[in-house]
Structures are given as structure tokens and as C-alpha cells.
Amino acid sequence: MNLAIDIGNTRTKAAVFNDGALVQHEEWPNESVPNFFEYATNQAVQNIILSNVAGAVHLDVQEQLQHHFRFFELHPTTPLPISHEYETPETLGKDRLAAVVGAYALFPRQHCLVVDAGTCITYDWLSAEGVYLGGNIAPGLSMRLQAMHRFTARLPEVKGGDETQLIGRSTEKAMRNGAQQGILFEIEGYRQWSGANFGPVKVLLTGGDANFLANKLKSEIFVNHHLVLLGLNKILEYNVKRLE
Image 1 (tube, rainbow, N blue to C red):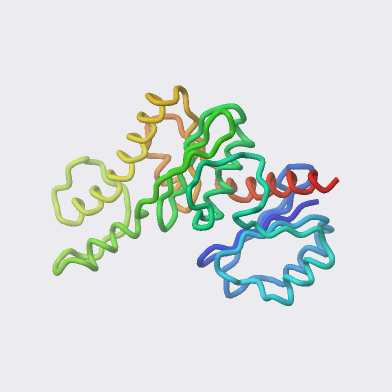
Image 2 (cartoon, rainbow, N blue to C red):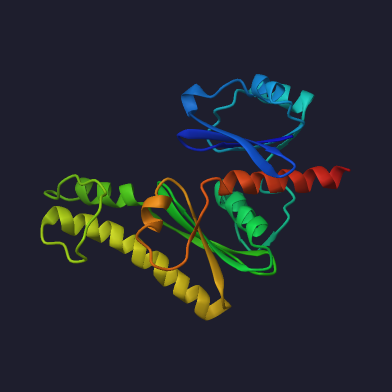
């Protein structure tokens, strides 16, 4: 039994895996995370991996995990089942790296484009040879809408939503279309570029806006909300095997 913990900027996700299959998934605000030592004990966990960007796990709890379980924390130097060409691995987001490993587990020996549609949208490429090539970062949907409101004098605050016309005929619709259609064109443009440069490519979409965007895209998209946790578990399995 493995436990993968992903602590983001505002929320913490955890998943229990049994022989590679996800059997339990939970999510909490960072201010309400459980005691993971008790959580892991109750789940009969043997191996744990932690990806932590917000420090939501207290050091004493982390020390308990280290002493009672086979424990790994994801760092830039953590051995991975893929290789990479990133020039600054110390600045690479742990969730981005884990999501790419998740794509590698789902589609081995295939070119992949991983799109994580959260606060920011990240675009990351994995070659069929299992090499992480790098990626790009762009503002997410809410960030785009909020930026138009905050950094102008008169544009209103607008929320995302369905629009039936591509051309907005009011300021609110124009802003919503600009943000949403911009992202959709962005994804489609990267998909087409990837196909032209690499050949057939699998496009995987994860993150909070994944379903919303996938429903508006006409090309084949694979949505997986647990892609980061799946990747963390694969990294954990890889490191456990290295010790055996």
C-alpha cells in the first residue's frame, strides 16, 4: 500500500494505491489537513511520497513519517522513471513533474502534451522515449478574468461561463470569450504544433478547469483529475524498487 500526498498552494490531495491501483482519494484545504501519521497508519500504508510546496505538514509529523514508513519527499534530485532536459530543475514545479510522470505511466512510448488547467495553465511535453522536454506557463482562466478587472479602470469583474457565440457582443461576453477562447485556441495551437513536430501526440488535461475546457474542445483529449497523484505513486514505486 502506497500513500501519495500532494500539497499545493491552497489545497492538499492524497491518494492510497494498492498494487498501482488508486483505491482512495481525499482532498482538504491546507489549513485542515489531517495528521498524516495517523492517516497512513489507519490505511495500513507501507510507502509514502510527499510533494510539498506550501509547508502544510508540520515537521514533527514529517519526522514521524520518516521513522515509521518508507518515506520519500520529492526534490529536484529525486530519481525519476523519466529523464529531462530542463535547465533549472530546482525551479521546476513538483506538480508539473509528477503530472508528466503520470502521463508516462498511462501512455508509455507515446508523445504526450500535459495541460494542467489550474491557477496557472502549464503545458508540458514528454517524448515517446520518456524524456521530459520542458514546457510553458500561462495565466489560468480565473487569473485572466481577474487581471482584466484589476489592471484596468473600467472593465467589470466577470466569471467564467458558457458562451454560444465566438464574437462577444457585450463587454462582459467579450471578456469571457477573450479569456476562455484564448485558452482553447492556446491548447489547440499547441496540439497542432506538437503533431507537426513530433507526430501523433496524446493530450492529457488535468486541474480544476479540466472538465470545463475539455467539454469545449473538439479534438481528442484525455481528462485525468488524479494525474499528479498517479505520477507521484509511479515515482514512489520507482524509488522503492531501487532500494530492493
